[in-house]
Image (cartoon, rainbow, N blue to C red; front, side):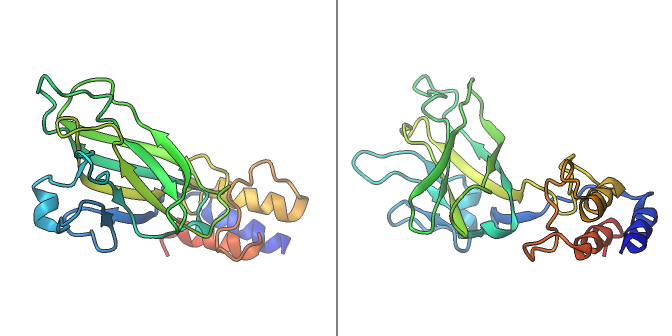
Length: 227
């Protein structure tokens, strides 16, 4: 095994790559399975393109929120939620950026809140392009959903959501967690298998079988070679 692993390290030593895995997307062409909790509203490319997917509360009606389909938590450690939205009344005297600031929530399959993060806007602006990173490794569920809401917003403070891209925060192949995939990631598995060294083993189970073996070296090797 030692000779095999050493050969892999030598083969990939000249390669460096960055791999970000997209888990799910919401935009003009990708909205199936997403739930927009606005009664009687038709979620389609036209309504999304016209910036009508607004997060706010209207009188006694339910809060208008956007909820993703189920995401498999078993293959990721953390996620990055990238959001593109607009504050259509940003220049109105009634607009309050604090009220229009979104809350991003992780829900279990039954809709219970497991984690949340409040992303506060500090100024008035039309375009709202932001990212939030959230840990999911500690969640006691196999699947989860993401909900976007503006719990305090009225019509003038509403955030119109145009695009949501949820990515795997830990890149596949990035064993040591440095943000890139290099020969150092192969070395990290090599050190663990031969010496029991876990100091650089952040994400060693690359093939998703629940254990760290030589097959995980192969998985990283394939990523480096673009297989």
